[in-house]
Length: 382
Ligand code: UD1
Ligand code: UDP
Image 1: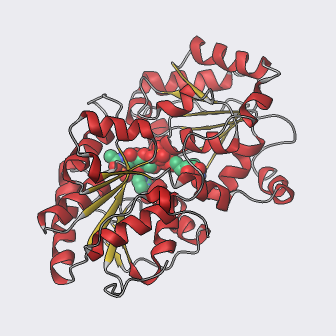
Image 2: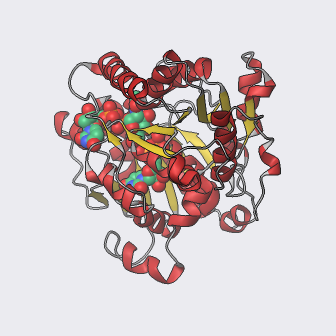
């Protein structure tokens, strides 16, 4: 992006720590160019959840990499330690604005550290609400919602949630969701998809599934029911396992060796999207997958009790299900629906036009420069 006369190098800190944040902030970092200071909290430290995605999006190494404050002490310790470390960084080398994305512990720590240092906070993917206080992410979203100076809402619905909580309209911009351009960028060309897919799935139809939410992974009864439901779908299921889920399957002594379940390590973004684009059906509790499915035009069964992303459900791409007969029956209905692919192909994504990263970098730069924050709808393709 173009720099203003007051712009300086690395003066907009982009703070993140997990796989989906890398995917969704990569475009913003690229648009910011020299102004982006990449601060990785280290929350996700395995290459399969972190480094691989820097490679996918051609990002340079982080300018600052923290140690994640992971360990057995829980959320309070992680958020508190990261706030202290980020506060030190922001005090020693003060950015003009801090960008955070989503709802993780890294998001919360980045927003808190910036706010306590008196630095303007830009929240990307602002305004999502599940109203489920048992979700760590819902609390993180609400904390950041209080602290943010500029809320980049992906959709009018998310902006409406913020307005209903009393956030002044002048602090909200509807930008679209950066996942649209991330998906369009990562999705391999049709000719290249087969080679990626055949490493994970035998020729023929298959289902792609992912699970990592505590409500599913940390509950032995629910996790067992999910694995059993997946093995009863009548199709092979490719299941790239988040390390949290892999650890819980082992801890609970669950049997995941059913012949139709293919448990694999997490895959990189192009491989995941190649698999998703070839799958008959997606089954997941992921937030990002609920959005990507609207770009890929694939049906998704969400295994959750609530969702902060109602747009994909309303548009007909996704529905909430419960592990057990509900999930199996919902899958059978979708698999038998011969007109579904055509209907979904004709349904626009509610998450925008693929220009969100450009809009967000423009409004963040204005905030950092102390200029009036533009209406992002005026920021269009050149
Ligand atoms: C976190 C976010 C969640 C997001 C998800 C994306 C919070 C509260 N949760 O959940 O919102 O949807 O990332 O994937 O911030 N682990 C590894 N290697 C890693 C990282 C984690 O093995 O590189 C294992 C560790 O055992 C760790 C566990 O996974 O304790 C959970 O990791 P954590 O970052 O706490 O939460 P996620 O479930 O990944
Ligand atoms: N993803 C991936 N490889 C995998 C599983 C998921 O690249 O093996 C991508 C997926 O395309 C989506 C993102 O990871 O963009 C979702 O991350 P996750 O489900 O961990 O977090 P959430 O979106 O639920 O916060």
